[in-house]
Length: 130
Image 1 (cartoon, rainbow, N blue to C red):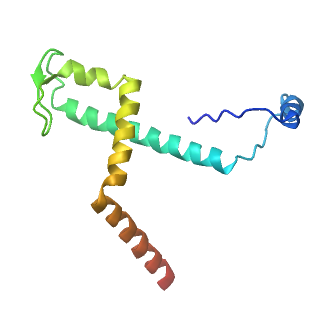
Image 2: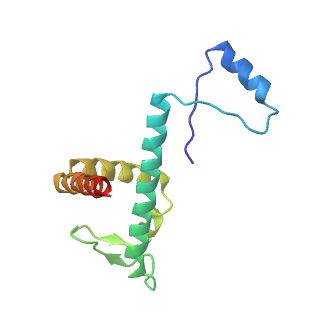
């Protein structure tokens, strides 16, 4: 869930909220900055879920192993324990930091971005043909 915190410096906003506190629905128009913040937070949430899914995939290989079993993952040579990997699934700070690095790495990945824009171009062309 994305949470936008709005500063209520404008007394009209405070009055608006007071008047709608008992309403069943409330319509609030977000600023461009708030929309950008919500978009980025939602993307980060998706990246966190992707990382958790990848960790779960890795752990399927070790589901019968005890937490103190040491292993290496992919190309890293540092040995980690299965318990360390399991712990990362619930470490929100680590997941967020890793998701932020993942997002940065995606945007720095030229071949990913080339594929992204080529796909956009192809879809646009196909839609224009119809």
